[in-house]
Length: 390
Ligand SMILES: *Cc1c(COP(=O)(O)O)cnc(C)c1O
Image (cartoon, rainbow, N blue to C red):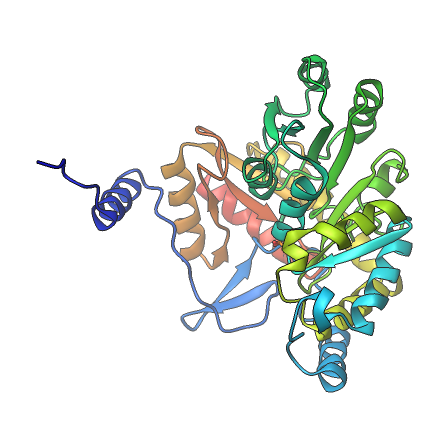
């Protein structure tokens, strides 16, 4: 007799049953308003504190106009991958603007940050090689390493000594260290200069995923590398996304001529995927202009961050000391985060609970994010309700 075969439907049922029991079931809520400080669910307005639209550009009138102009000029879909016939002058212009903005020789556009990260590992490394990643790196970098042929090791969060030890392990292969610039769930800024020093010492390359720093950090919004003043020599692979501070969608990798040429020649998530809609590239160029033209957005965002931190400290809330727009409120237990999020919803605030596996066990949290579109009054309202809910 052949043994009972595993059944996919049984496995699904068991899995959903288990995550429901564990309080880890995730639910989506559809809203019918633009991204902004107030969004509407089921005819109820909610003050929104979980968007990554850090500069409040996603619904900016100038960006909407640019998107429409882009559609008028280029139509809607790109029609093919960049290497076939999906590459337009809008993509080209955006690449030039991103290179200038980040102080790199060249940049290349991907349809998403997730796809860009997959290609970073697959394009640069092979079987004998090794990826080293911070334990709190974004899932897309973890997946990139796991889906590649390279080996993969993780070091304790921002622990450069642990990284050095891992890099000392014998092995002839190439080594790539990957880190978030700003950690997506904790909001702390990676110690990139220290990481670079270890990489230089151990002949490894450093790749920085600046999804949460690009457009926000640095003198002119150039991101984490501008914040620290790091060149393409020090951070040869710089990745950033357009779906967060820039208010559009898509991502880039920036670096020197040779590095970017290598991606054009062999990045599979670029070659085998339809190009970003050209109107989005067109609108993203406008978003880069807006970052320069409306510096007040970053200034206002930083004023709100300070206001929130000061208020939260006075209330004795368990914030982490993050200096960025990401201000996690740790609850520890997943149920507690979910319950707090539910109570906030009742009071008219949208703040999602972040639970395992997105964050390590026992570190569930409310991930509060501030944006330039919030008012001081809205931040004060959030603090008021948090003081009541404890
Ligand atoms: C959001 C995010 C990504 C993925 O970018 P998408 O363009 O949304 O696919 C990658 N890395 C980090 C750190 C992120 O926060």
